[in-house]
Each structure stands twice: as structure tokens, then as C-alpha cells.
Length: 130
Image (cartoon, rainbow, N blue to C red; front, side):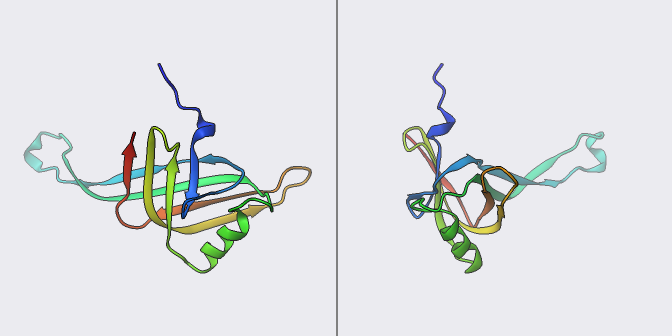
């Protein structure tokens, strides 16, 4: 069984890797619309509605990263829609347009400075398998 190493999964904005990430996750959820009728004998029935997807991430603040916290602050502050992709460019890659709706910067005592945020996907996302 082949397993993709999590270190090989990158999160990119406009084709540039976000530097020093420690985690990124793709979340996708289809809305459930309940259509259970009284005569369904208690069995719950649904149809599928819209899709909402997001990509939360976190990492260490590296001021020399080619794409880092300063770039993310600008995207968030200016409410800029960006093109993102998440994947390893060899097995599975997800592509989407998104807004950076949440951004957090943390300066803990005696520890590395971290940042985190969530890209909210706007519209349809696509994927490719190679």
C-alpha cells in the first residue's frame, strides 16, 4: 500500500507555496435537505443541496518566506479573492477560488510565533488526479 507523506501536501496561493505551514486541511460538505414524509415509516430521506468548502491552515511565522504572513494579511485585509490549490502535484490536487475570511497571528511565551486561517471557497472547486 502506497501512502502519500503529509509533508508533500502544499497549499499554494496564485501558484506560490505558503511558507512554513505545519497543517492544511480540505473540508467539503454537501447540504442535506430533509424530505421525509409522514408515510415513510420513520425513515429519514434527504436530497442534496449546495456545497460549502473551506481550507483551514496553520504554520510558523517565517519573515523570509516567499509567500507568508505579510501576504496573507494583505489578502485578508483587502478582501481579495485568490486562486488556491492544495495537493502534492503528483497524485491529487484541488483547485479553487477563495477568500481568506479568518486569519490569526499568535505570539506565545517561549515558543514559535504561529499563524492560522481559513480560506472559504467561492464557487465550484475542481480536482485533478495524475
